[in-house]
Length: 82
Image (tube, rainbow, N blue to C red; front, side):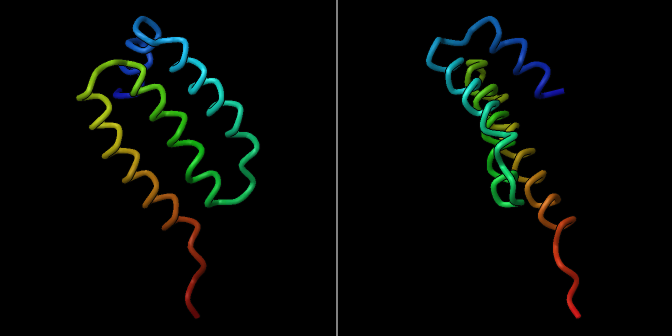
C-alpha cells in the first residue's frame, strides 16, 4: 500500500533529478548478482520512488518497512549452523 501511494505521488511530483535516480536504481537492480547487492539495490529503487513522492510520512514508513524487509531477506538466506 505504501509503495502504491508513493508511486502515484512521485509520478505527479518528481523532479528530473529524482526521475534520473529512480531510472538508475531500476537499471542497477538486474545487475545485482549477490545477496548483499540485491539487499541494497531493491530498497534503493523503492527509496528513490518514496523520496520523489514529496511525502515525508511515506518516506519514513518506507524506511521502516524496507528495514524489516532487509532483515527478513537476510534471515531467509542465512546458512544453517551446524
